[in-house]
Image (cartoon, rainbow, N blue to C red; front, side):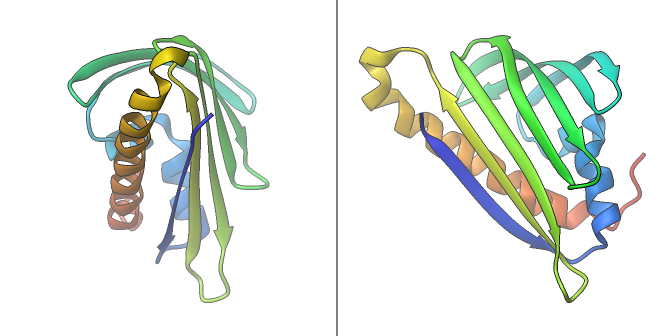
Length: 148
């Protein structure tokens, strides 16, 4: 499965950055092309969301479960169902010695069409990379803004 990994250093306190990442609606505002997010279920350390987003002119729909680890400042997403065969992601935040935060976003995916993967995977990989990089730049810009 293709793996996309993007990293960004954010000049804000860890707790502030984690507050944005941990908040479904705040994180969704960072995502360009997201047309809807519906929180279906929440519980201790997790939530389930249904999402719709436009990617390269195609409307993608999926449901994912988010596992939230406040102690490690780690959020993992796992595809439950949707237009892709598989998609998992990890947000990892690490406090740096100078008071900044290193943010790593890793996404693995499988489009689910093996006979077209040589053609489609690079396109999807580039789209996911570009979207992820924009999210991290947006995160750096809003980390000093209180989460509504």
